[in-house]
Amino acid sequence: MAPVFVPVHRDARSACRTGTLALPHGTIRTPAFMPVGTNATVKAMSPEDLEGIGVGMILSNAYHLYLRPGVEVVRSAGGLHAFMGWQRNILTDSGGFQVFSLATHRKVHEDGVEFQSHIDGSRHKLSPEEVIGIQRALGSDVMMPLDECTSPQTPQAEALAAVERTTLWARRSREAWLRSDGAGVLFGIIQGNFFRELRRRSAFELLDLGLPGYAIGGLSVGEPFDRFREFLFATAAYIPDSLPRYLMGVGTPEYILEAVEAGIDLMDCVLPTRAARNAQAFTSRGPINLRNAPMRLDLLPIDPECACRTCRRHSRAYLRHLFKSREILAAMLTTYHNLHFLHHLMGSIRQSIEQDRFLAFKGEFLEAYSVGRDRTG
Image (cartoon, rainbow, N blue to C red; front, top):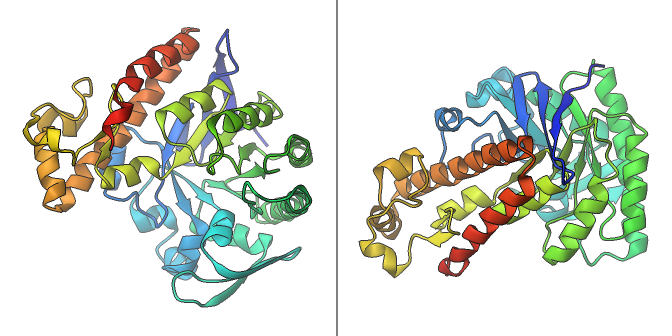
């Protein structure tokens, strides 16, 4: 199998690098951020909006799509790309996190998971093989295997059992993927909670499977930033430079920059779109809350340094009015800005890496960004 990831340039002073990720629906330049489209849509964004920004890959969720509208609906439409009118790449999360965080009355065993739907209470069973089958039916470009997530408070013995199941399920997922002709790309998910020896064990057991790429799960789940950084750098270092590294669930500039410094190539998070729907906007001088009273007469754009469509046409005062009036356009315009802001940030990050000045760029960005951290209340 030809490698899907090609490193292009490694920063001279850190582990970060640029690269290309060749996938069925186009090549992605990395590091890259993926907007989240859980239910086959990035909330408040059309496919044309995403294309206009330059997004080449989004994340959707197999658990949610399996429950609603159902795999047969998506399959009948010709797959997820055709169903949602998006002809660029899609990574689908297996739903392991959702089973453990949303479903009720769940049971975990070697064969898979049993759970009760958070939508209608219906009961379901999913094996690692079935999860791969669902993602194959969706037509995912990158698939994630069923894994077992654990909370930060999990005792070490329980975390060890979860690592063992995650490895077992990854092995069975790989076999199912290869039996189905190996279409798309399957990544492994490194777990291990906040135990260094378990992280190492999970990484090396999964690396033995020879998968095309690897994700880091179980971080950015409420732990202190220093602990996040410690386990991020330690885990990322186990993944060889020749393979793509994906950090699941980070989407603020501070966390993105930390991930890039550790050598991460892909990231995703619902936060940028969720924040936008709650009037929180990214700017080069830190986040702002567009509902705040000082915005009432503020005729500046969200970010005077931003060239996005929202910032070219609309003021903070107008956006505050839309939010106060509960107009749908408020979420649409702010979401467009937040995703454009992150896409532009990723481009600047790649440029700084290629110029061997990423750490300087990071410091300059965060110094400016810290100015507005107290404006979100």
